[in-house]
Image 1: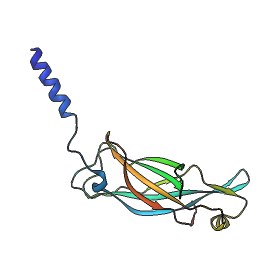
Image 2 (image 1 turned 30 degrees about the vertical axis):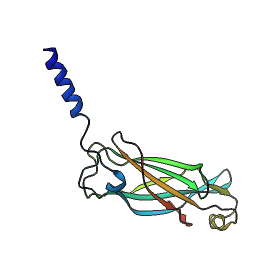
Image 3 (image 1 turned 90 degrees about the vertical axis):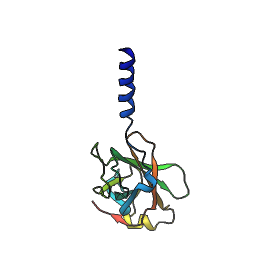
Image 4 (image 1 turned 60 degrees about the vertical axis):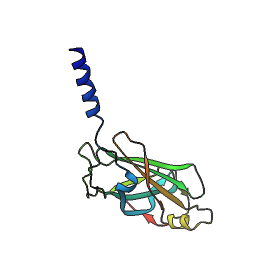
Length: 159
């Protein structure tokens, strides 16, 4: 009886380990990427702009990708420190079907530039440092995988 119980528990444990491993680097692509500097209005008497990205994930594999999540990290060019980051829940347990594309996902940094200059002047200021955005993804309990790294376009985005 005890051996039968242990065998059943082992079978259930192995069954819960999920399906085949999916290589997100080849199974997932970003699509419809749009970047820029989001106008955050006036904060403490100064104009504020922050980097922002809108994108979609496209499942180019022949497998469903369950519990898909995204993580975005903004950095200034030439720097390792984060300018900001954001997390997005892409799907629940239903996953992203093979060949399907997610809805638009938008993430904006918490940090950026503030100035008494106009927003357009801020982008043209000689001290302005361009940035880039790294987009990561993971599914289930896997590790984060870098899907793409994109420059942040020097343009103002209004809400």
